[in-house]
Amino acid sequence: MITVEIYREIEGPDAQALADVAGELMDIVFAHRAVRELLGSWPPGAPYGPDTTEARALWVAAVVSYARCFKGGIRTCGAAGSLVSLLRQSDQASHEYFLNLRDKHVAHSVSAFEQAKVGVGLGPAPDFEVIRVAPFESLTILPNRETAEQFERLVQDMQLLLVGRLDELGAVVLKDVQAMTTDNRARLPELTITPALPTTDPKISRPRYRKRSRPKP
Image 1: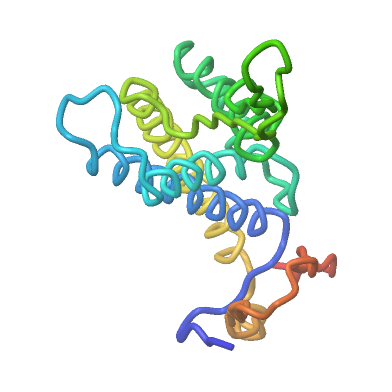
Image 2: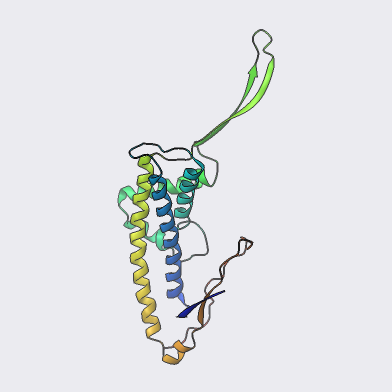
């Protein structure tokens, strides 16, 4: 458990919304860093980069992290989803494309990016003796430079919108705390963070805002 000195924990709908936006922004920032690192590892001007383990990992991580902000989860604010309509039309189309890429290819193998067929090796006529049976697969993971740059522009724009929403909600929560009495502010608990361990069961959900009465101003 980590105690954040000076800070006290504030709960309530406004504070939870602010926390949710911070979580979404954390994912968007990571997606931006991942795609930027991917592009930086490619030869300048090359339409395609080398198909390495590192490059695949960066691209998958970027797409998955971006989609986390728009899929089901314990975050309830949905700030990122509400901001999609503020994106440029081209960015909105990109947004739908990358969510489909995550759903139909990265997370599930149901798209044309993956193909698998089985071939049988036959000997010459007239007997066509069976020599061997072998599977043949084709898997496309990495985008071309244009698509990766398109993704980078999208996450940059979404990041700016989320920062704006974060500032708006931060101002609301600040007013909430300023409206409280000195005694009620003094009774706020210390802010503590308990990081998950590598051995933590991923099936365990983190707790949401506890619905208790808010201190009256």
